[in-house]
Image 1 (tube, helix red, strand yellow):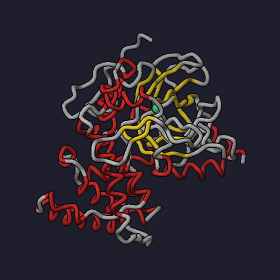
Image 2 (cartoon, rainbow, N blue to C red):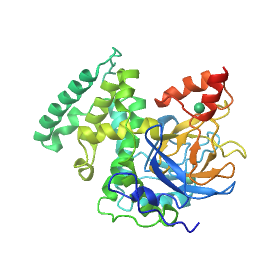
Image 3 (cartoon, protein in one colour):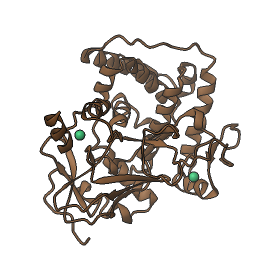
Length: 380
Ligand SMILES: [Zn+2]
Ligand SMILES: [Zn+2]
């Protein structure tokens, strides 16, 4: 593939999207939003993209000791042997191997991420002494949502007037799902901090080292779709929960992250995770291809790989996704024609009827408009 990204970019003033892969261009689809379109014919079995590492990820507390913090390896529920700690902390991060520990250290040379994640565990435990909070699940309107966040900004301005050494008494209790969400937010804030002064990228992702890949993913993160409001309308209790998360993050984050923290950044980080996150499941046997509906598989958490977020869904996909440790590989399932849209499937409901598929896909807040649905709806 010698194809050079075309100069004519269909997106804003930026051609960064042309450096995701030499095989495809990200441009607008006929049905709205962006999609990935092949430049040329691509043979069957070709790897067209490797997203090397999530820009943000989380594993639930239940699997803290059993799932590798870097590559998500799982050893059938056994506690992993390789630990990373810091003096004066009785908490650890767990890894499957020394290689993963070393790579993690390479990504986090100043131990800022390590410290933030260990602090999260300590604050979580301290919070357990405080009373549990229940959130209202009364249906919301868009103005309820904006009012709640305006109130939160007033709270935030008041907090910023107080010395940060006095903040600890305001730290709220968080529940387990907030813990998971905060872990993801911390990883994004850390990458924002690390990539702050990174230069613009002029090479394809496949030629970048791990730090450069992360810098590139941080830039791509800006392009992701935010479905925050849709989430609140469907799950109203999330509004108070996200406000709680915001307060926790403000009050517990290190000084290096503070300048990135404001209501709009945190709302956008959370709002982008649902439609863009890839679920992280245990890998069973020789099957590395994700099949979400399988009783033998455990759900650990999720990772956001912005470079992999531009593929749309089809119920007859021409691309398959394969997870190899912390990497996502995308491979053609058949020969691709020039200018064909490259699609994956989001939920692996492909064996279901068109009605069930469409209902399941609503979880991602869209109506599937793929050719297969069109044909099956007509004939149904
Ligand atoms: Zn590992
Ligand atoms: Zn469909």
